Image (cartoon, rainbow, N blue to C red):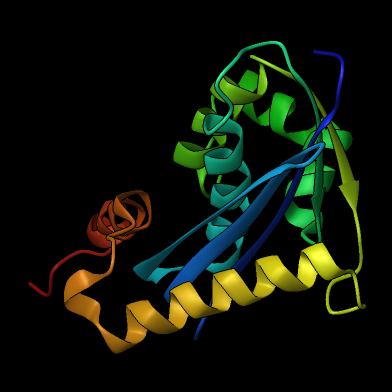
Length: 169
C-alpha cells in the first residue's frame, strides 16, 4: 500500500482552560473516518495535540506514510522544527503537556509522518470540518459534564502545582 494517509485535525477549548474537544478526519483514497471527543476541563493546545495522537493511533498498520494537516503551529512547529525531540532529550524539564508529547512520540515513531500547517478558518474544507467536530465536542462536554471525558494529564499537571506555596503558618 503506497498511498499516503491524510490526516486533518483541529482542537478547541471554551475558556482555555475549559471544556474542550478535538476533531480529526482520516482519509486514504475513497476511504475516510471522522473522530472526535469532548473533555470537561482542558486547553486548546492539549486538544490540538490529542487530535493528532488519536488519529495516528487509529491507523491499523505500522510504517505508513502519513501527511498531517493542522492549523496548530504549536503542534506542527514542535515537530518540524525539532523542538519536541529536544524536550525529550532534556527529560521534558517542566515542559507543558509532556504526558501527551510522550504519547505522541510513541505513535509518531511507528510511521513516516510529515506535518503541514495551514491557516485556520481560511476556507479549507477539511479543516473547517475538523473545527466543527472539535467545537461540537467541546460544546457537548460543556452542556453535559457528567458524560464528558476527564483530561487526566491536565488535571494531574494542576495537582502537581498544588504544593508550590507554603501554607500560612
